[in-house]
Image 1 (tube, rainbow, N blue to C red):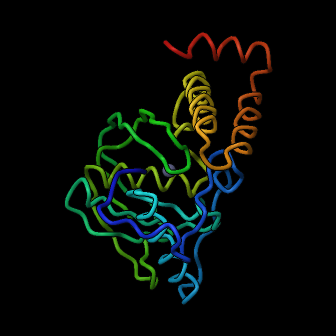
Image 2: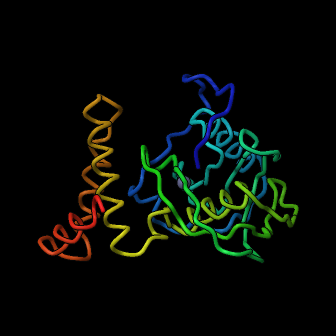
Image 3: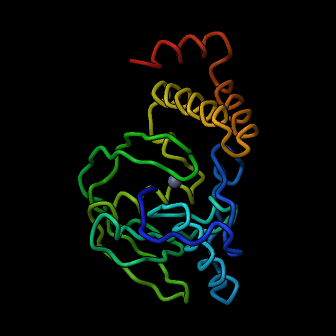
Length: 218
Ligand SMILES: [Zn+2]
């Protein structure tokens, strides 16, 4: 999830991790439960905080930095009163009514998607020391927790859309990536190629292209 914090870490902070873009494999692979609550985990959490604040995100899941573990961090304080939270092995034990939420994602540069989510959730998780806690979340925190938890299951927010809408959204994503690459931004060649390949999956070339175009701007 994205938003803006006032003072992000410096670009050359050695603790920064690479944030992988969808559809790189770490973003499409379910993560494993965290079993060791030691120094290594706490170091990863610290680096995730630095990386999240640097990217001006409100949430970051371990698979986004290619760590295949069930863990996310979130800090929704730019938008609402909320403490920073480390959520290890999280599960949603209760959900409220469904709403449509408009979201960005650090792993989908430039894309905004409307996704159905529960307006409130009760989350059970462990902190970085393994202590179990349960918390009732509403507002942006509830949305963010669901978004990040999806990453732990190998899902991006486009996977919450119906098949045709997903395809149209991926075409929009691809166009946005191509525009960013045209402006000389980063090394997006690989993610562009992977997204093209993902669009080629499933429906078959000719039929798929036609369906995608038809829905694209509607
Ligand atoms: Zn995300």
